[in-house]
Length: 217
Image (cartoon, rainbow, N blue to C red):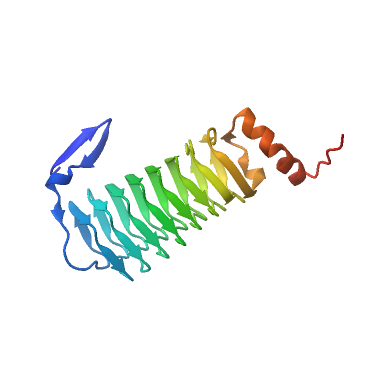
């Protein structure tokens, strides 16, 4: 593989060996070993594209479509996705550090071994998606939609969930410990999650209300 290094069993592209990207994005294209640096894409169409061993730094996607695109062995740092179509995308061995996603449609996407670190997600729709071995580290998720999603081995350490909806989600080995929980729907879908005692106390009134339990002293 060209210019790669293996770290903890994962393959990541070495930035020094990447080729600077120039021009415009096109649909159904392979972008192999490209460096995207400081570029703003307005209404770009990269649907069905494949970004393999690429890096993104200081990039902005404003509108446009990346539907059914794939990101593999790729790193994104301080990238903004605003009102962008990421539906049905595939993500594997990807890290998004310091990124911001706002008003993004990411329904029916597939994520495996993906890390969101110090990221902000505002009104991101993950409905019907499959997240496997995904970590949200010190992130802010506001009005995140996980309805009907499948979450396996997902963690939210140090993150804040405000207005998160898990209605009809399927959770297995989901670790919510260390997160600030603001869940507005889908309490019945929390089976398969792990919380700490402090979180249980905070959630108790909401769970009681959801179950129709009246608490009186």
